[in-house]
Length: 170
Image 1 (tube, one colour):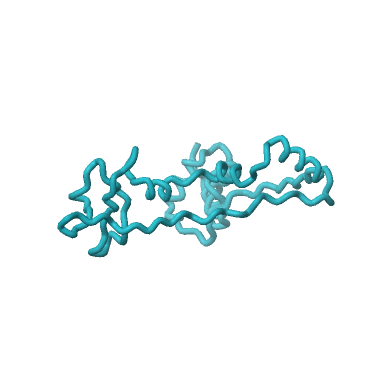
Image 2 (cartoon, rainbow, N blue to C red):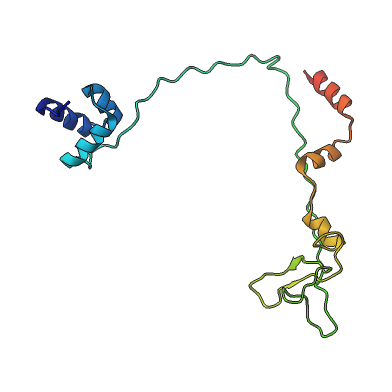
């Protein structure tokens, strides 16, 4: 297959109209998308007046799901979030008055950072750690329960009672 003058003219026209290489290949026929791209570059047609846009598919109408009872209000989830724990502990000071730094931390010391790392008074807690990298107080701050557990503890009702109340709302 060769590029005849009619096919090149059609290619230039379709390219200027903003058609994609795939669309042009389909309209010209018997030519691949890559052949169209190659010919476009050889002809120097890389710049186009309008960008290529894929053909738009007709939108399918959305189907409405039937509601069991549209008039009954649905119960809203509990929006209460407990305040975050804030433990303000000063870093432990050694006998010489200095605090724990990266260079002085040991495995048995709390590694909770206190202050801004860019400032001179930045230090680590330095207290005795318990089963992990933090002391007891900082472990409470660092390890917060997940949202699901928190939600379950706020709603102290048993699951069966909650389910029955939900069904009664409908």
